[in-house]
Image 1: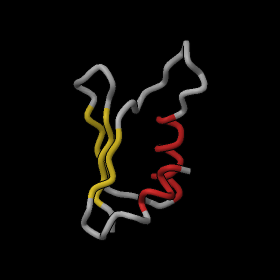
Image 2: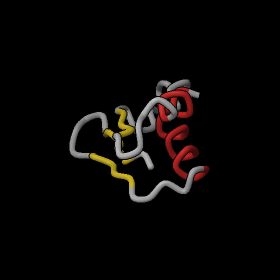
Image 3: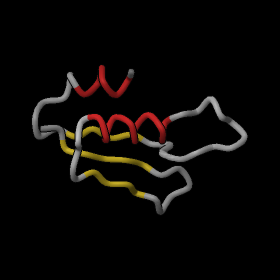
Length: 64
């Protein structure tokens, strides 16, 4: 729900970004990756980027 709510507040050309884009096996209630994947699929977002070089990967896309 956060992705849907926040994206409406971002102007076209702005950035939608977040962190903790990962599966956390010992914390199944954390569903960031699943939520972002579903949002990207539902809205046919392309391109979008994953920065995985850190301990908690981040995601980024330009809002159209």
